Each structure stands twice: as structure tokens, then as C-alpha cells.
Length: 438
Figure: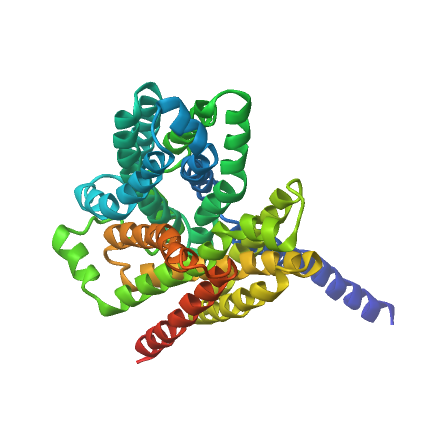
């Protein structure tokens, strides 16, 4: 037994001499797998986060977009200081919109061969310089510089959207575009009112000087924080090619019927919610009977809803863009109709305003997702035209509202117009879905 045991011990000894190596190898393999699993999880978690550059672009759009919504709040002071009529001062708003709608696409063509980071810096520099020069001159100078600022703003907006999707993987294009567009929603509900408040304590120019300072800060941030085109696209695997298409390629993309269908959806849905938002303060004061101190808080709920909508829309639109478009448009119809009833009760109008903000901005990321899917090979001109479509939707609402209000219609009629506009967008979305599946 002992010799056998000895042999067993020898055998065990041999096993003992070899097993640790195998065990170490097995343990190393297992540990490596676990490590890969943990690092893979961390990598996936990091991958779910958008790059800081996307949020930087959103901040830049907030800074520049604040100038668009600030002027309305200080318009009487501008008219008095420059010794012009209020209607003449109103042309300053029209001039900016004209620069965006008409000047954006031609600028996109002229800057086709420019590196995106260079274009971002140039457009912000021109915008800041235009605003500053306008503050130092009279009415004519201010009007001219507002037009130039509108062109620069449209150019930045378009290139920022292209840059954002170049920083991320294709499955997050709509989400990245949504973050950039969120800068505009912050400008609408916070930047404009904050600039108006600052101008109240200084003079009407104070808020615009703050816009200049923030725009310059964004310019520096883009130069330092946005990678060169090739590096960004290569690292992220973005859908936007670093190779610059020629003018013929860009124009070919603009001839696609599907793109114009989405642009029409953009105009209709933007006008659908903006026509109610533009007259919301008046409705809250005249129909709801809210005190003046409470109206900004209710308007802020629209902005809070916009953030929620952008978050939802950005995540849904990357996988199911038409579901986001249809849901948002249908919700705009329902909520615009609900507004005509809810506005007479404070407890009812508050949730409707918040939900309207959600519905409005669920649509926006999906619009950009479809635009860059249709015109992925030539996104700059298509992006600039999309910005123009947004601005056209915004600037068309005063004329649409005036057409009925000047005839004695009730103030709630503007929400009925909004419902009709959103309803008109639904068949176009269905048509785009049918085209994309054939």
C-alpha cells in the first residue's frame, strides 16, 4: 500500500508540478474574460455618453440663438433709443429671419470646401462681430448687421449639426442632433428672458453684449475642443464622410423629393407649436387670468418639456424616426386642440403647456435624423436648408396669426391653426415612411 501510495504521491506530485501552470492559465483566462466583461461594460457605458464636443456645440447655439429671442423683449426700448417707430424696429426681427432663410443655403455652398472646425469658428466670429458693430451704430447699421448675423447663425447651425453627427456613431445621430438643437430651446426659454432682464438693469444693449461674450467663449471652445474633421469622423465612425462633395453632389441631394417632404414636415411642425408658444403669454394673461409673476414660470414649463422631448426623441428617432415624427405630430394636434379648452383653467393649462413642449421637441431630432439619412453624401447644404425650414416655420407664425386675429377671431384660434398645421404634416410623414420601406 505504501509503495502504491508512494506512486500515488509521485503521481500526485507530478500532477502537483503541472496543475498549477494549467490552473494559472485557466485562472488567467477566466480573469481576463471577467476583466474584458468589466471593461466592456465600462466601454459600453462610455459609448452611451455623447462626446463633450456635442454639448459644446449646443452651448454655442444657445449663445447665438439668445440674440434671436432677446430682441422681441427689448423692442420698445430699441425703437425709443433709435428714434424709429415700433413697426420699423420690428423689421430688425424680420432682417435676422431673412438672413437665416435666404442666406443660409448659399453660405453652405460657398463654404463646402472649408474644414468644419474652421467654418464653426468663422461663423461665430462673423456673428459676434456683426452683433457688436450693430450695437455701435444707428438703425440702418443695426438692420444690416442683423441680416449678416442671420446668415452666420444659419451657417453655424447647419455645420454644427453635421459636426455633431461626425462625432458619434451612426446609431446616435438623431440624439446628437437633438442635443445641439436643445441649445436653441434653452435660448428660447432662458437665454432670451435672461438677456431681457439684463438689458432692463443696463440698457437694451446689455443683453446683446452678453451674447457677444458668450459667442466668443464658444468660438474659443470650438477651436480647442472640436477635433479636426478626419480625426473626429475616424474616431467615432460617424456617418458624415470627411471627403467634401462638390457643388454638383450637394445640388443632386437637394433634388431628392424625399428631402423636400421632410423639409415640409419641418416647416409645418415648427409653425404648429410656435404659433401657440408665441401667443401663450397673452392667452395666460387674458384668458387664464394668471398674475404677471406666474406667466414666466408657466412658459418655463414649455422649456422643461422641450428638454424631455429632446431626450425621448433623440433616443427613439435613432431607431424609429417615423414613430417619433408621427407621435410628435399627432400629439401636437391633440394638445393644440386641448389648449383651446384648458387655457380657461390654470390647473388644466399647466400640464398641457409642459406636454406641448415635449411633443414639439420629440419631432426635431427625428427631422434631422431623416435629413442626414436622405442626404448623407451631401449633408451641408441639406443641413443649412433644414435650418432655413425651422426659421421659416418660426417666422411664418406672426403672419398666420395676424390673418385671423385682425378679423376679430378669438385668441385661441392660433392653437386651432397649430392643430391644422400639425395634422397637415402627418400624411407627409406617412409618405416618407412608405418611400423609405420600398
